[in-house]
Image (tube, rainbow, N blue to C red):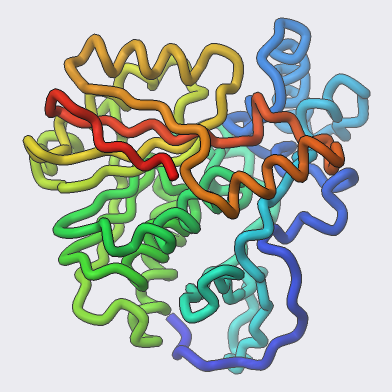
Length: 339
């Protein structure tokens, strides 16, 4: 782990490293898990498998159908400014880049992240658990991180982020801004957690966490040992855009229910994405959780959303890009967060 340094800004850019060329760059072409980001129709599903076969065969993904699936057409709500930091460690020959993510609306808060957006290796595609989070910071994660800053006084006790991917940006921001005892950063993918551990150490060395205990570990929602080890431990569980994998949706509901303390609350940020959000809420209610859906939960996010709809920028699609907020509680009355 290299020593922390303030570094010199090479350039400042929007929060997504793909923002400038989002219509040319492919964010999902190297990860089968992230192919679900744009559509759910039969033709698109077929294109996903075509893309996966091309990745495995190391062929160029150049058909129109494949390009439709693989291009991340909307990258960010511009809630964070992203500034690249020049490393002072001349012995570091890795492809990683350290960047500072600073909140646009709460500029006193920032986190140090490490980009690792290179190709996912063949053995990772075949053997890893959901590589979606190893590709980039997705808009829902960005929104959840902003929400944590906006509502930082609401968070207390122990907090867990599920499915946080390669950065767990929201969990990091919460550990930096809120008066909480503990933050657990988790994902089901070992590569993601390896990166997150490095991020946590770098931010800890920079003195960003105060007295908050921050840790990272692999947590698979369908793993009995992973969930039972943490059962009933958290006051708040949160996750962003984790509802699209059909085979894990019920496991996610069960994991949230079991991880929460009796009076705990879950915050789930996710777009409608066809029927996926409705099916998740249905499963949550069947599991005995009270689910409440919120559309206008933050003024800044809502304003960006309306602007995107009005101007039609960046192929913005409300169904797959605007994250709704679902609050889940074990008690009879869900807590409202509508502004």
